Length: 174
Image (cartoon, rainbow, N blue to C red; front, top):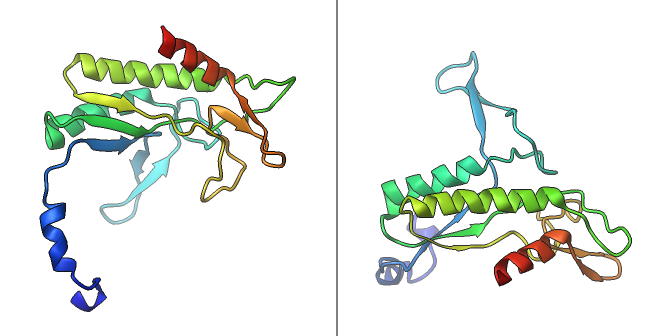
């Protein structure tokens, strides 16, 4: 196996063995699994009952709360946690110079409430990043799915802040 490793790989251990300052977690959805008739362990992913994003992912803020609680309890202890990615894809449409995206606003509110609940119960969450500021190229789906707080016209590159952008800006000022 060593022939496949980069030259000097052994010298990396002092650096990668250092303590870290924080732990980042990405959270978008949950997976619901059910047993099937195959040999153990044999599970199939099944559709959950909750509302879905444009990616067909369930909107499940309780999962973020549980993920943060478990991560702190079982792995990181008092190490600060940062939600490094969380967001919703929606079929955002620019109409009359604005983008109404109430489901993204609700998504953010619900997930921030889940984070606050975790913080109130002692989980050391120190940051939250929404994916993404701008609509962008999604590596597996191209330009079809829009996650951004700012609508991007991919032909002209004109950028228009969505209602969720304005709501977040207002909340951060208050």
